[in-house]
Structure formats: structure tokens, C-alpha cells
Length: 244
Image: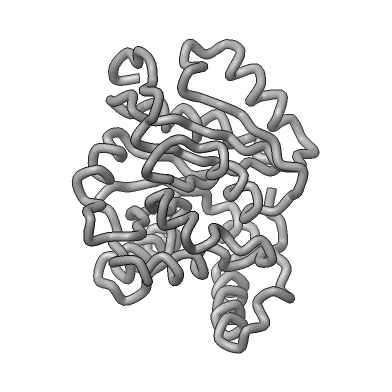
């Protein structure tokens, strides 16, 4: 950590919510990236949901051993549903600003500082720029293309992270728990009714495991198909193949 964290405020400014379903290989690294911030006005909430591996045991051991128990919390969700898990985390959160961070996605240093300065009253939802965790030309190209689309308002998506205000999140009813695909996109569209979208000039590093296992062609086909299912209103019938 960049500096010693003393004690979190009774009402932290940020609540970082991390849903974790069978994420034993990633979860601790992700939590450590949240603790690498140079401020203490945040809480990290890990939502362990229906895990069949050692995710929960690793989280329990980490919390028992860490000196930052006042910051890191664990809650449980019985269902392997990422939208529901995020909603549960939001329910237990105290921060005015919610940061939904995927369990395989790492914050860079000073991310919270940049979010604080760039996520203004004009904005209601944000994401960040993204880097791949595998340094291959094809992955770098894809993530750079994603960054270009997000920063230039060509497409308003997420990159393993979504930022919003808790008040707005509650007003729109949170994540749609009926969806297992593109629940992020639906949330962003609803939040945009409250203000503007912004891509924060800060990077997260996210896992390329799906692209690596599926290949670029299969991944492109899948997401194109989901886009048209969104338009036709048939997205609820879509399932999301788990990659672990």
C-alpha cells in the first residue's frame, strides 16, 4: 500500500463492490488493488455468491489476516447471479459513490482520486479505460478500440468497472436480476437518464480469459448476437457461458 490506512470514516465516500463467483485465482489480487489506493475514505465489499471452489475460504483467510478489516467486508449471496450479487453488495454499502468492480479486474493506483476529480455533478455513470492482462497484439488492439469508443462517446459501455451514485442506483432499481448478459449495458442506459456518461482517464487491467478461450471470432459473434437480442427485447432468454 502507498500509505498506512488508519480507519475508514463512518460514512465512506466510495463503496467498491466486487461480486465473486468461483474466482479463487483472481479475487485476492483484485481486493489488494483496491487497498493500493492512497486514501482511506472507501470500503471494499466482496459478495461471495454460490461458489463451488475455494473463493470463500480465501476471502475469509484474507480478512482474518489483513490489518484492514475496517475496510474489507464480506457478504454472501446464495445465487450465482452477478446482477443479484451486485444488488446485495449495494444494499450493504455505505458510500455515496458505488464502484462495481469485476473480480478479475484490477484498479490502478490513484484510481479513486481520478474518479473523484472527473466524475462531476454532470455525470451519472462512468467506466474507466482498460488494459488486457495478457500482452498480445490482438488483445491490446481490442482494448484500445474499446477505449477509443468509450472516450469518444461512440459507445457507452463498461470495462469491468461501473461507477455511479448510490442514490441514482436505487432510483432506477439497481441491476436487472433477470439478465445474465448485458446487465451492465442496461444499467448504464438507465443511469444515463440521470446525467452524462464519462470514461474516466484511469486504467483497469482485466482478464482476457474469455477471449483467450473462445477466440476473437467466437467472442465477436457472441456480442454481436447479444446486441441484436437487446434490440428485439429477447435478452432475458440468453445464458452466459461461465469461463473459469
